Length: 314
Image (cartoon, rainbow, N blue to C red):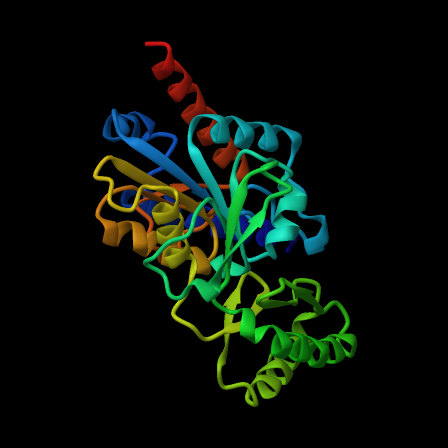
């Protein structure tokens, strides 16, 4: 009986591998396609955008323990030395910086609704959404904080208080405050209680019609309904970094979650660049390339930095 179970398990694994191999034909590995990417990027200015969880760090049960490895930090540091680089995360901007702790890259938190940028942009709403400040990160530099949802903050805190009460009643549930959005984590919730948790969260949010619920990997994301997402954040950063009208720029975005699909779509709408999905299983995606996991992401970033260093000394 045990032998039959093992056989069925391995047969299931083989089927998944077969589907993944088929999926790879449409979303080839960025590692095996590196020569092609390098050729397209020759004499172009590449700008690197990265998600955090599941891309630079593994997905873990406790979101507060999602640390990136020392090797990954070194790889991202090197990328930041040779390419303009930004991390666009669902975490709060302060929290993602605490995880990464690098001062040669830019940060956008709350799924791109809280951005640290080098300059104002006249193309994105009123200046009320863009405020200047002296950066403690880029020491002595004047920076701009772009935040189109600042007015939502009081209600976000009210919603958090209500969701905290729900989470206390369901073992394993937790609510993460990402400042301008909230994450209800249920990775550690027993399967029979997940439906109950979702129902209670959805019932609470019925009273907040200007907020949306979207689902990621074992998480419900609560955010204001505005025309802003990771793709718009990518576009805003390109603009404020001086690349908006450049025919010579090639953005690359690497991410693993549903929220990253908006950034993939934005790159495809720009008509140039490299959207890269991080996934160990086949899935629907707008990405043109893929990497399996953070280990492959690190290998790709190392290759990219080495290539750039080689170009420098040609």
